[in-house]
Image 1 (spheres, helix red, strand yellow):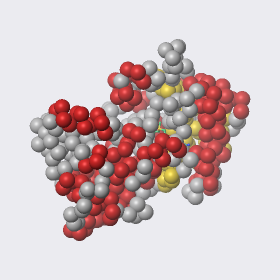
Image 2 (cartoon, protein in one colour):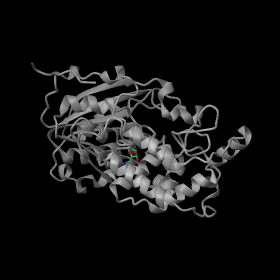
Image 3 (cartoon, helix red, strand yellow):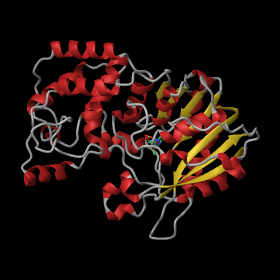
Image 4 (tube, helix red, strand yellow):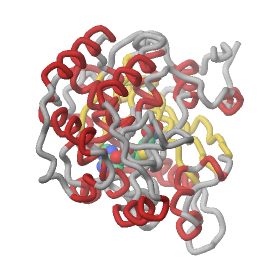
Length: 397
Ligand SMILES: C[S@@+](CC[C@H](N)C(=O)[O-])C[C@H]1O[C@@H](n2cnc3c(N)ncnc32)[C@H](O)[C@@H]1O
């Protein structure tokens, strides 16, 4: 049976919101997409053992899903937070190794001086919890696989909502959202107004709880790769399928048109990683205007084209934008118009994926910025030279 482009559908919309491997929700990440999106394209365009890449990996959704589907998942990103989340998921230790290391750290723990920690950090953790976090910050080795998994697990629980009666929490901080770090001044006012308690939460106990949940379905079937890298340096990465240019599929959502400040809104997680928030916001790309955005997308598409195999497929997830209250701009269509003229990519399809407004993470900024947030995502699906066959088998959910 011959395949036709019309076979691509937004099937992931009908799948339960929590569908996917338990590693996916390890830590919240702004503008993350659901694992159902990469899963759908992985099943349509790849087979077991193929290499699948996301060069803007974020929390590592595509790379992790690829590993869970028995492919080699590769995630690269310029944000160190994204790197630590992705590498933890695609190259994890075993549950046994993780629990042993946690027990070993717990046995070694000593009280730490917390007075030199920033005031804004002292304001959100009980002094005993902060002492444990400072101890772990010093002990955990970012180059060690097991320690990286523990670091990423802590990033997932470092701040969040307390339980209803405010006498316990699955998170380590005072009551606050888990998705992003509120501004230090806002937190100060919020704590005073609501008279919020700082609970002495035991980091090791919560960490064990978190790790048990993460491993409840075991680790993903295959291991993958991650690197901290600017898309401009993608072809130089020392990852076999990139070096050999055998990437079969790319599924990725590139940076938006100026919506998200990953450093500013992750200052608590970045404190734990010992990375200044300014460095993150200075280095990441976010164009303010359409023309530089299209230039960036042309460059990014060329980089991806270079590492794809001859019938490889690239899926860019791009949200529509509204600027200055004007009409909806279908950015994905503008990107394709540019790529059609400047690259050898062929269009397979542009799929429309309407997003319910309440689901958008960007809503947290309130009205003023909400206008810029997308209500429709479009998936620009393109192939390199030879049109690949779309698998006619229905996707297994
Ligand atoms: C929309 S997010 C991707 C989210 C991801 N799909 C997920 O599910 O978590 C875009 C990503 O692009 C990254 N980024 C921005 N500029 C970059 C660059 N020049 N090179 C590589 N990554 C970059 C950001 O750090 C961010 O993680």
